[in-house]
Image (cartoon, rainbow, N blue to C red):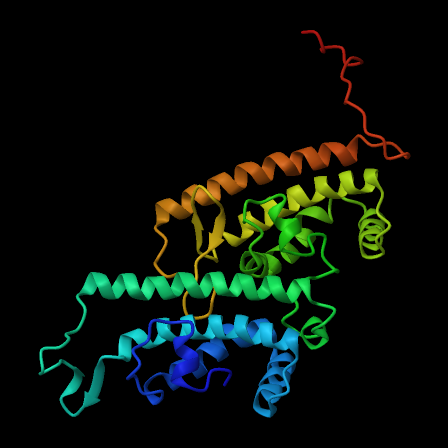
Length: 312
């Protein structure tokens, strides 16, 4: 584990100094498995853990460790809260109370607010960890070459920032990773039947080779806009989204992606209707663009003047 003592855990949480490490160690281990490993992947995690044990961390690893510990600490407290004040016996699940009168269990609303605080803190810490890894992808090659890498050059929308340009996700990495399977689906289901395969290959090669021209970038933006809303439309029935004045975000619980509360049918219908409306608009624009484009890829406005009934 990357957090091995109560003192290390206290750096990122409001843990009482008298808390025994054994009472939270299982939650720490579970938090690493559920929240951290999907981000780091096993090779990068093992490398960091080994160097921590050997006390040979370099400056970059020390910063990475801090980000990782913030994720694990807040996620561990979120997971541990339901069991910190209870014990199991032949009498069933018992609640521990103070007999000295110096403290007593928190009431329900304080408990819920405290647990919610750690959930929000863990979510933010995950975004910061992803951001640090992306900025230093040439340093952490084990991460870059592993399953945790969050950039997919084989897709028309390669990363969270490209998604955020067309879908209001506040550049969330978690939202991008949650939508990645649906981006793949939408590319195959909606984009490939419209955009010529040679054009898709051309654009992907231009982006990966960093040789993309301004006209190509404008064309790619048109495709990405339709693709982003199509992927979102496909994802709404399966993922739980939370919308507010700032962004569309993916709600998070045990696995970092599932819902912290059931989404009502009305909410889901509203999201689906909005996504469908935008998807249909941009897909229609894309279809018009590729059906009215000549061999020089210069688009023109469709003209109906030749039709006998045009002015009727």
